[in-house]
Amino acid sequence: MFKKIVSNLPFSPALVGQLGFYARRLRKEDTTRRLALIFVVLTLIVQSLAIFQPATSANASSQNDMVTGGISSINDYLVAYDSNTKNIRDVLDYVGITREEITKATYTEIEVGSRLSWGFVSHFSYDQGERQYNITSSDGQRTTAVYSRPLNLWGDYYVKGWVGYSQKMGWFGIMRACGNLVTNTAPTVPEVATTPTPEAPEACAVNPALLASDENCKSCPGNETIWINDPSCKPNVVKSKLAINTSQGYVDASTVTAQPGDRISYTITVENTGLNSDTLALEDNLTDALEYSSLVDNGGGALNDSNKILSWPEITLKPGSTQTRTFTIKILDTIPSTAQGQSDKTSYDCLITNTFGNSTTFKVNCPTEKVVEQVATELPTTGPTGNIIFAIIALAIAVYFYTRTRQLEKEVRIIRNNTNTGTILLS
Figure 1: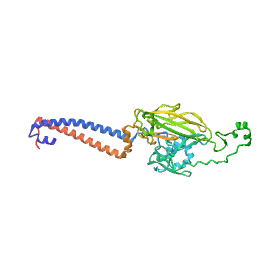
Figure 2 (figure 1 turned 120 degrees about the horizontal axis):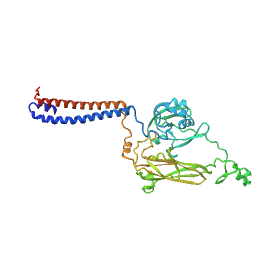
Figure 3 (figure 1 turned 135 degrees about the vertical axis):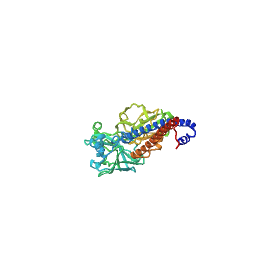
Figure 4 (figure 1 turned 60 degrees about the vertical axis):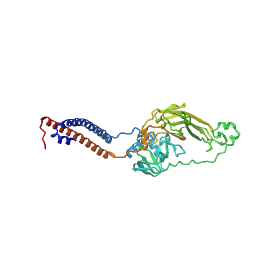
């Protein structure tokens, strides 16, 4: 267009009006392309910060992590081991993995398969394969509880981490995202030697006063033929849980999708099916539930704000007796679109899972962003080099068009000036 106007201008001076119109268009383009160039430069600055100082995920760690936030090298793990942070050294001593064996671990991909993962928070039920181990320190004091469960319960995928070999446990792995232990098997628990059932001392049978006063003479409650030192005379506590959506017609919560504002009533039950009494504390970990809800009725318990454990005072459960506790959560009115957890894949996954003996799981009606996240789980990996090349190309294109517009604008001014002074030359 520009060349056509300029070439015909000597023959038709009236075209100078079109040249003026073209000049005004160029000024608008100049403004637009100047803004485009400014935004491209600002984008490059932000992208450079993202490349050279990448942001840390707001949900990169969880209470389940053996090393909070994960590790970037095996030395990070050794620092936690040496300081016994979160009693990690006690856990590894229990499993049978030494510091020297950890230092020899090499970085690679860990295939999930049928392996076990270890963590500090219960996520699954006994029937799903989760087992609890009470860890003690070198002086015999109980320090923490750790849980092992099939790694494929988190999903069938590869995880990155360090792999080593233990003389006691054999193959083992350490996950980069959370520092959690991965093993092929669980540690072997020594069998408790059993002894024949002792008979009641003859004096106990003929002396009721002795039966009442001597601990060795007391019979197992509920069974007069089994004595207190019989291995069968022990408690057996069975835990169970039920979740009811009271906002959608008092139905099983797992059969419907929870909507914002719904109320979910949980009932936990403990039953002693053994032959002796047991004293225990009732505790329920609500970490996963409180990501999408708030506790509106604690059922007489107390919620620890730091670890999200709802607990009740200790109870003594007699043989054959049952006790229940009921509490209620309310689904948040605005469901957060927080990204799924990096170290804990069950975190912010649009599901609420709670375990107390058995596991209860139900869906939450998450916003559209979470639906997109679940469909497109990962964007193409380009890396810093690809990002820099794309940025340079985008900058070059923006600079070219801006410079071209400036050049044409300058040429138009020269031609209009020559036209007004009558000095247009034919070439």
